[in-house]
Length: 226
Image (cartoon, rainbow, N blue to C red; front, side, top):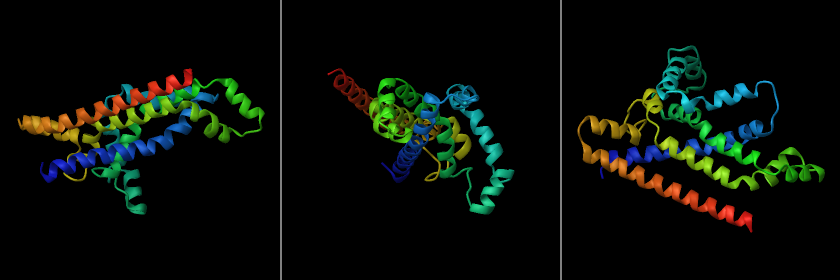
C-alpha cells in the first residue's frame, strides 16, 4: 500500500467521522423539534431536510458551487472576513456532507423519539423536570437504538458519497480525494486491481459496522422486553 492509498482512505474516514460527530449534535435537536413540535412550517422543514434523499447529488453540488464559490457574494464574504474557503477544500466537503447526510441522522432519531411512551414523558413533567432534563434523562436513554442507527447510517452514507464530494471538492490528493472518487478514477484508467483494493476496504468496514449495529440493537430490544 502506497502513501496515496493510505492518505485517501484516511481522508475518507476523517470526513465520515467529522460529519457524523457534527450531525449527532445537529440531528438530536432537529429530530426533537420534528417529533414533538407543532408549528406552522413543520411540513416545510421536514421537506427541506428530506430533499437529499431524492435530490440528485449533482444538483446539490452544483448549487453549492454557485452560492459558495470564491467569486460568489457569500463565498467572497466568507473568504474576506474569516478566511474560509468552501470550494475544493476539506471544510467544504464537511459542509456539503452535513447537508447531504442530514436526513440519515434525523429520521431514525425522530422515529425513536416519537416511539418513546408519552406516559414516561408526562411523568417526568409531573415530577417538575424541564423539557431539557426530560430530553436527556428520559427521551434519549429510551432512544439509544434509534440514535445508534442514525450514527451508523450517516457514517456509511458519508463514506459512500460521490456526486456531492466530486462537485464540491474535486479530486485533490490529500485534500479532497476520497475513496469513492478514487474508485471511479481507477476504473476509468482500467486499474481494476487498485479499484478493488479501495472497494474491498469500504465493503468490509461498512459490513462489519452494520453487523455490529444490528447485533447491538437486538440486544437493546431483548433487554427492553425483559
